[in-house]
Amino acid sequence: MDLSERIVAGEPRALARAISYVEDERDGFEDLLDHLDDRIGRARRIGITGPPGAGKSTLTAALTRHYLQQSLTVGIIAVDPTSPFTGGALLGDRIRMNELASEEGVFIRSMASRGSLGGLSTTTREASDLMDAAGYDRIVIETLGVGQSELDIASSADTTAVVLVPESGDGVQAMKAGLMEVADLFVVNKADRPGADRLEKELAIIMSVRADTTAPASKDGWRIPILQTIGLEESGIEELANGLDNHFNWLNESGLLEPRRAECRLRRAHDALLRRTKRDAEKVWRTAPSIEESIEESPYSIAQRLYDKWKGGDRS
Ligand SMILES: Nc1nc2c(ncn2[C@@H]2O[C@H](COP(=O)(O)OP(=O)(O)O)[C@@H](O)[C@H]2O)c(=O)[nH]1
Ligand SMILES: [Mg+2]
Image (tube, rainbow, N blue to C red):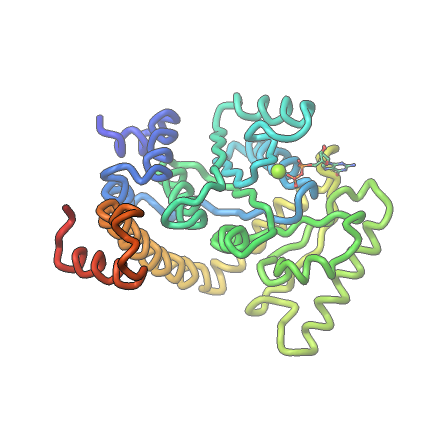
């Protein structure tokens, strides 16, 4: 069996290898993705984002256990260097995550934040595609909600939950980070600590204020729920799972799911084009002059010469 057949057959090792191919942009990885394209689209993709320490990994793990109880299989992608899934974080958290990793029906992958040519968000989406092709029912993508590229990852999911905690104090911080824009659902985690109700109210106020102005408190008519959870005690997880399902069902029934996914695919084509271009540029860059040779020539002249060489099809 070739790699794509083994992925479709649900062989975890084949899936792991394929994700590495994509990450490393190994020869033929685009053909592999192309080949699997008609296998993609069955899984529901869930983005879990928020500031560091909010409890994203804890909630991801709790949600995964909930899905397993419903006989659903789960692929997890952690794009967070401090994730217990990847070896960061406290020992206790790590042990809990490792338990999960050994469960049947769970596939966990961490993605390095190191810059891939196509951008982290592209690679993450492609890894999700591979998990989708492998038959996982739910794909949970945990990302730090700190920069644009992280938010891009989160917002490429069908449904994105933004996790905040009372002690970070303010929805204002979330507003600054652009988290309000990507949220389909807010989770106030660590509700065992003081201030959870206050944060919930704060978020509700921020959203209602936005409704009066140009930015909607809802996205295309979806009312963004605010839920409270205690990730550590797995409390509120069923409500969270229901909230995620409700959003997905709403997307589906309102006819928005397909166009959104189609838009995402088209963006991916754009990313794939840019990545290819960059790859070729890097190839031609290998023929760049040495430092000594370059002294007499302007940077722009060097770039132009290499560009012409590339355009002329000269890859030597
Ligand atoms: N008190 C309390 N601590 C929690 C809760 N959820 C997670 N934590 C702890 O908060 C810390 C950060 O959690 P983690 O899931 O790694 O956060 P992440 O950085 O957002 O992925 C860990 O030590 C968790 O055990 C909760 O609901 N209440
Ligand atoms: Mg984490």
